[in-house]
Length: 74
Image (cartoon, rainbow, N blue to C red; front, side):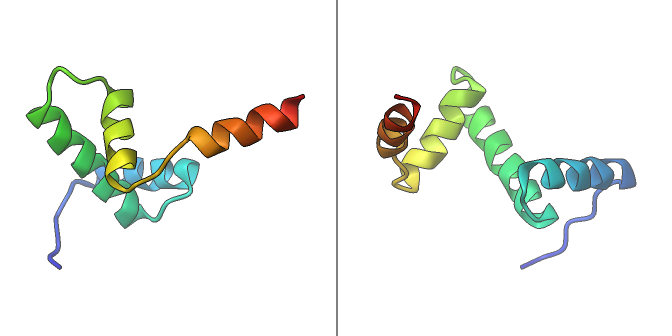
């Protein structure tokens, strides 16, 4: 693992975003890096499509969640 030097301003934005997203600062930075890299490689995809691709690659399915949510609303 290496050290990446970033500006104080970007680090502050990472800190705030990581709190809002309930991630560590390093996890937030890694997420932004992954999304940015995927966006460069797939410029035709939207942010939501990129996130869906990340979730799919981790075998995460929202199907069960949707079913549980719908059942609890009824």
